[in-house]
Image (cartoon, rainbow, N blue to C red; front, side, top):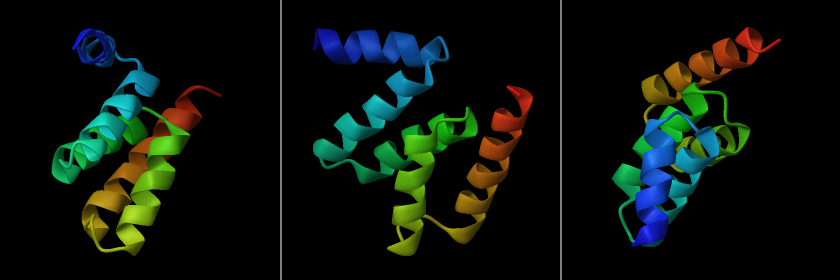
Amino acid sequence: KKEVYHLEEAAIAGHTSARHNLGCLEAGNGRADRAMKHWVIAANLGDDGSLEILKDAFGKGLVSKEDFAAALRAHQAAVDATK
């Protein structure tokens, strides 16, 4: 319980790894739709691990082409902004 609370607080504050880990917890609890949302947000903020998971999910048909393309563009923009 405490772990989830602190991960949620960190994710709200903008920590990408916390958002990624929330996605992992949701996936482990059988809530793939919520997990995908967390990973899309984390990828949009520049998290490489989340982008890789989305790439795999897209290959399996779990993420739409539009959602994956949008996440990929946002990820690239976030990475470019940090250079």
